[in-house]
Image (cartoon, rainbow, N blue to C red):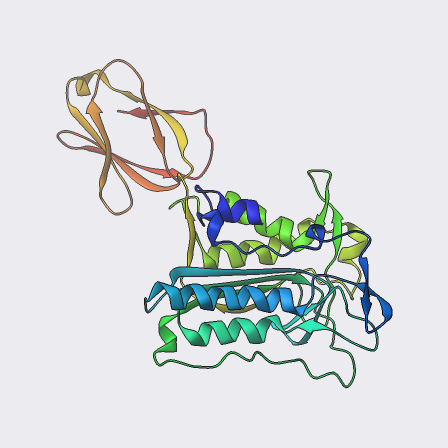
Length: 320
């Protein structure tokens, strides 16, 4: 996910603007430290590391002297998780035990940052189980203070890897690596699988619709039939957010003209009657690349033909 974020052609986030906390950055096995004369295992990361990321954002905002720190905030979590309902949960930390359930209430902290209104757009992706929170545990709410007016101006995209109370899984993916199924599907979508082929746009709605169907495709059959494993993400607020602009997919067509049209002007218009291509008709084939949808070929002075482009075809189009 970090690689996608800092890729200038994808997430476009400058590397210095990314805070990255991963268990791989800490000793394995965990270090042993002396605490009050007792040897204790120092399991990391802890809630302090994640809270530190929030503090870093707030400090940068204060130093900037601006109303908003940036256009979009991405927040991504992957690990062992919990939920109290759909899209309302967090992750357990490395130092969590059955008795001391150390955790980070991701949804609450994300909502707290949203309420600060220091970005225009907020994205939350959580790849973790949406299992019920342990009995008698009350999630620790965000301690972020402050709320501004006009909160409706901030756009959001919120997705959890599974609906409450289902589990998320890691499996061997098509690239032969063990990965979180949701994270793999998410990156596939962000890298172009979710785009609208007609417009080349990849919006929040495109991504949501893709993930609804794609997640189960990456699950092995035994997981698809397991009622405890989520085969569809849970979605919170999905606003009008764009995740990329790709070159729209096109399909090639060959157009030939009757001799009576040679030397005349030929035009192709899209479904909005906008001229997208034109040429002088001649004896040679006119080879064109067209986006999916309805098009019209016009040849002066009075010939026209409608074309429906919806896939590959080797048929020659004859303008008589």
